[in-house]
Length: 147
Image 1: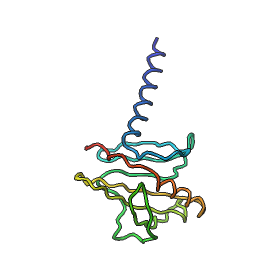
Image 2: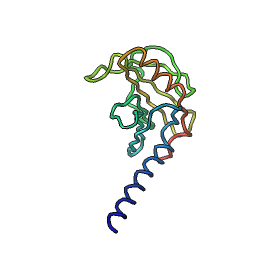
Image 3: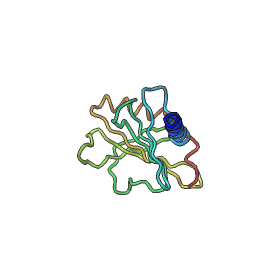
Image 4: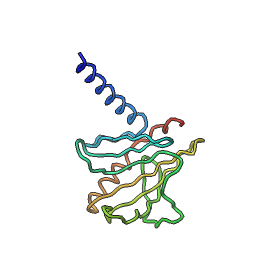
């Protein structure tokens, strides 16, 4: 009996986590990626990964205090994420960060001041182009719940 209760609890917890990411994380186009969601005290983190993989294809921070300081960042060029025009910035070169890495901010038209900080990394220019194509087609939800 205890094992049935434990199994039911684990299934409910997994379903709740999946539902939370579905409500907060942007909607992915029809691609082989899934979200891993982590909630913070006043922000949400969404990591797009291939099913069963630990590799993050791209990530999305949703909150009021992104770590990207555009005043100090190096501009790479223009682009689009989820229907929003963006400026891409060079990502800090740290161990494990690809030379095909970039990041951007999306400022939503909302009164809460929530922004999306998006980062993407790739091993080749072709891989980067594919990942940017996916980001172009994501759909942002109305934004994370007020916290």
